[in-house]
Length: 447
Image 1 (cartoon, one colour):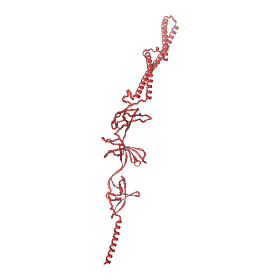
Image 2 (cartoon, one colour):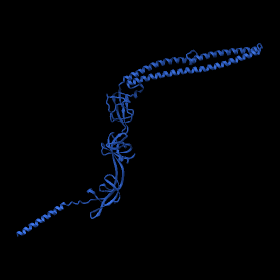
Image 3 (cartoon, helix red, strand yellow):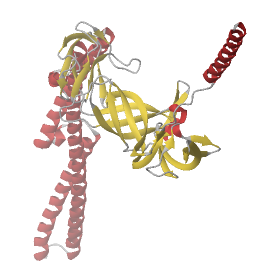
Image 4 (cartoon, helix red, strand yellow):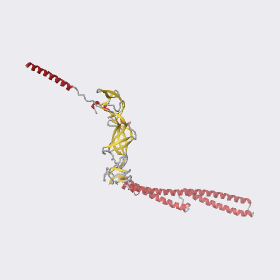
């Protein structure tokens, strides 16, 4: 009996040992996960790129001061709508002493010049009225032409007397020859003298008329020149006085509404910023200084998106390509835009070459976008509609070929080569090698 129990214990021990080994063997074997399969789906595949940038106004103008001075009054604030020519601010001029002195000296010089021009004009005017209108050219012998005219008139009077004397002699001798008191030869000599006297008179009269015309022209020209000089002196004095007033006060009587002390908007739009305050000192725009900005005005009805696109994708973009803008500050809303410019030259930004991009934003009637908003643009590079597609993670890439695993029966799978097309990074288009209802193995236990 004791022997029987001993044998039984040994057998139990052996069975326990064998069971333990079997249990450990089973535990050590890897578990076989169930193989999952999926079918291709018909869908739209869109390949797009994302460009970050900002929304700005196309026309944004800095209104600067044209004169140095102090801001006396600001009439607008940021956000106000303004029209072209509307007064934004008024300056209180701080005169430059050097320029004031120069302008004062110019006024004095112009005053003296006008006094001289007045005297000359009055003198010439009196002579002109006496000579031309009164017909007394010979009473004034102040120029060579007047002297020539005086001499020509004396010669004309002398020739006239000689002609009259020759005519009287002719008339007398004509009566005598009729009575045969004088010989025929004497009468012929009288006729010759009359002809010579008439010819001399005609020549002297022609010369007189020529000299008189020259003298009249000279007198009229002298009068016109004196009149022009007088007008120019008046204009110069007025200009000098206006310049002095402009330097001292910033305005003139004729330009009170267009004074440089009034800062005006140069475009229609909205005031984005007023960086100065009343009482601030401003500097005028010059070749040495860009001047102080009084206000920034922009046309908020014409907005553009500005961003940068990577060199690897810029070749796929072109003008008029649509894009969708997403603005972080405006939730649950997107805006359409179209590319209108792509920079021909790239810039190195953060180690990569980027090309500038500008797109016109299409604003709706009631839309308002603030300048400076950061935005993200989705640009569709390629698109396929209603195509057969699979998850790109279920593909096997080998030696420039693409494979999928399809069921081969008895839980086995075999590789099949397929042709693929456009990919959006998650799904890829299947061109050939796979039917819509076929199943493929899910790689890596994915879904």
